[in-house]
Image (cartoon, rainbow, N blue to C red; front, side, top):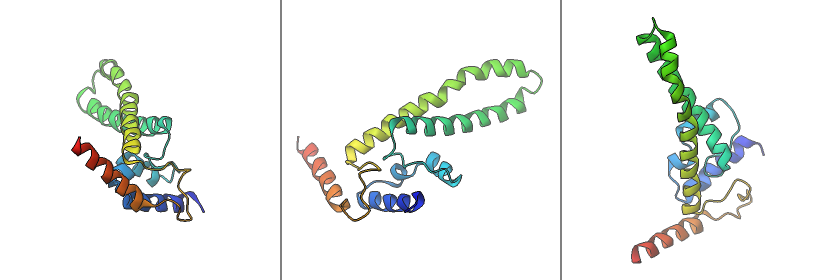
Length: 143
């Protein structure tokens, strides 16, 4: 079984487990998959992979939009523009870390299995996982 087939199965399993679409395939990962780069979904990925994917995609999109604005408004003084953009280079890694922490929290909160834990022979039971999630929510509301 290749990566793309397993990815389709994982997405179906997570939907049955009650995960939202943005938790399964956020736009940054959709862009990476559109480029046919085989990376695991964010809820199953490692912390470092999430930092790299989210950070790089955010950085490229952010800097491209800033560069377009710079060329439009600072076309006469590009050195000044470069000095003003330099501090923004830290935004990509910061966003990458924040989103990686968020997806690590989602995986723990929803008790989603990792990429390696997903058995393709039916051993992962999504209704049970969703049931345990709703039971945990019910206990939280009681306390």
